[in-house]
Length: 499
Image (cartoon, rainbow, N blue to C red; front, side, top):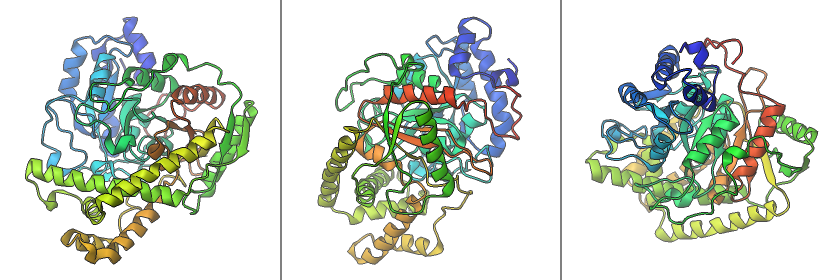
């Protein structure tokens, strides 16, 4: 298959070609590898090629609903036996894992052909993909800008046409932010919907979930259908959907009551382009017959963020300590920002951690009360256009504070921790909208409905109530039909005229 032919299809379409014997799995894979050779040197989306393993899998003519479709795994939490899962970390980049993650097993059972792993910031801890170990991933719409994070490598690969869909995960916006930056569709499943085992049961109390980034809604539906369902290591089973997710695409969502806001939950500035994106989406929704009202949950966004960060800091401390114990590595094997976050975690007590987690329930209740009146919440996905590479690097004073924290990590650095917290909150002003869905465990999606005057994508976010994945897919498919985006591709990467 020629690359230009390969680029014309999404995952569902490629699988249909394989079933109809119009193309083989091996031919699809070679087209994907050729496409990677064309664009990856500039984008740095794939940081671990697994081409021979992909060829081995493709040669088996895998069957399943997505049989034979090339696929990329995110290099975080998506373990593939015999290959490293570096998580963007120097100490782990040459340490092969012993067994597959369950979500990878499900993708293999669906017939997908993994042939590489994608770039991510160290431990997925940033909304940009710029690790010291692998360098920055770049946005195909403008390589001087970020593709977002932490699934930025996956988003860059999909936007550039290496694959029509790629693995991702989302602990604070890491599916939706890159989707918004790269003109793609990104659905974050709700808590417990997709397995995280066997090595993890419920990271961050279920705030972190596995998923995908795609060009088309039907691809996301098909992949969610393949992924969803509990496993033996799941903390609890959740009820399956009323019907297959693939059947939601094209189904009438009915008249929805949608609350929207253009204001940052942190009370900080929102770029006029992000405001315009929400207003345009609201107008489109009204034109489709939905009721759209300016409204938002009664949630203190700063308090929610602080409660999230308490868990985030503690999780980073435990992660760093565990890797040191398992590998014998030192501080030199971690980025300064990671060590800073871990040190911040060590300044918190167990009581701080428990009290912060207890307050999560207040935010869950407030969002549930909002959803008792509104089917969905509409916001910008991010507070402005994708930033330039390096824009969110820590300033020199923060580097000095990081070194102080790493050396001491005690109550003597209260002043430094306050300064660091202030800087972390400042960075979050670029992505203040996504944490709510992670902390509350509700499903959410970023939909590519807006491009800036300079040609950069800027998606909008919808947050549903618990178990609302089906509703999100129904609305997304309606929006995709009303305002198609899949044929809109970045210039400069040799796309055919009609994709």
